[in-house]
Amino acid sequence: MPSQKQLHWSELRVGLTVLFAAVTLTVLIFLMSGTTGMFTPKIRLKSYFDNASGLRLGAPVRLEGVDIGNVEAIRIVKNQPLTPVEVTMKVSSTYEYALHKDSITTLNTAGVLGETYVDIDSEQAKGEAARNGDVLPTLNRPDFQDVVRSSQSTLQNMQTLLQRLDRIVSTVESGQGSVGKLINDPSLYNRLNSTVADLQGLINKVGQGQGSLGKLFNDDTLYTKANATVDKLSVIADELSQGKGTAGKFLKDPALYDNANKTMAEARQLMEQVNAGKGALGKFARDEEFAKKLDNTVTKLSILTDRLEAGEGSAGKLFKDPSLYNNADQMLVESRELVKAIRQDPKKYLTIKLHVF
Image (cartoon, rainbow, N blue to C red; front, side):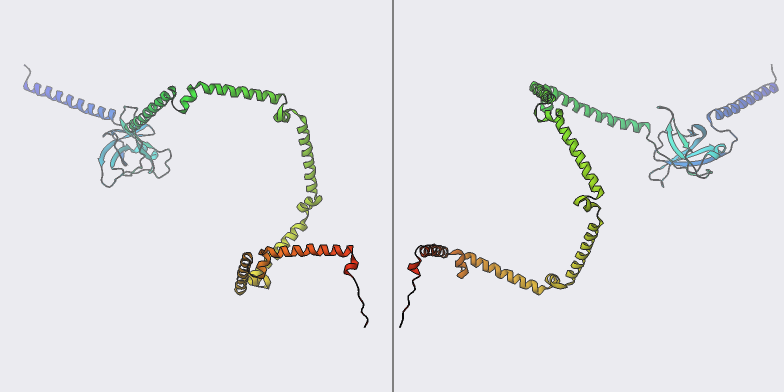
């Protein structure tokens, strides 16, 4: 039989073995699950998100795809209405040189069904190095569920569109509507065939030089005349450039410009004098008394013409009474007959009598 002392020593060795195995297992588990060394200094950084998106405690924190730490705490705060989820990250100070105050943090998913982790992007970061307790800005990206929901609405819209397209195709196949008649009505094909035949005949006539279009395409006379016209226009353009003729002088002679400029200056001076009330035109434009007199005169002339048109007064009767025209016409006829009679027998009308007392 073993003694009591031997039993206690055996139990102590078993206990020490178990304790050592437990410590070793704990260290191994920590080293295997953690992303930083046990004795490496840590810094804590924070970021605020609008949704945790399935993020858990201990989730990896990655910098450009490399694990540099873990998520230490996830909680909701009150002073961030748009981004209420506060995520505290514990990262290794070994990578402190690559972390900046303007580094962007996002929540990504490893694959379609993988776990959610915090990804830090420092490619565009130019700020100071991040320190313990700094808050890194975030960039929210749509998660997989948002993509699925958006895809579902898109699929529903596509299904609705396909149903409408199916109804349209059925309507067209049944010959309904303009498009349906266009596809199913044989008269359209006959008309189109006839139109193509007529067009082919027209093209043949044009190719044979018949008609106006045929002569236009096949007769060289038109080309010759057009070429001659272009030559004449070229000669005219050259003469204009050289200042020949009236049009050439109009384009090249500076005297026309000087005269026009002088005329404009004089016209401007005249308008200034008129606006100032100088001269007859100035008084005519600026004198209100003259304008009243002119208006009164025009009014009286209007009344006078109205009375003449109505046949009032001597002048009115002169314009409106036909008897004056008849009497004048009759007097001219009688005068003509008298002159004719005098020419035929002047002695009858030109007798001279002398009486001697």
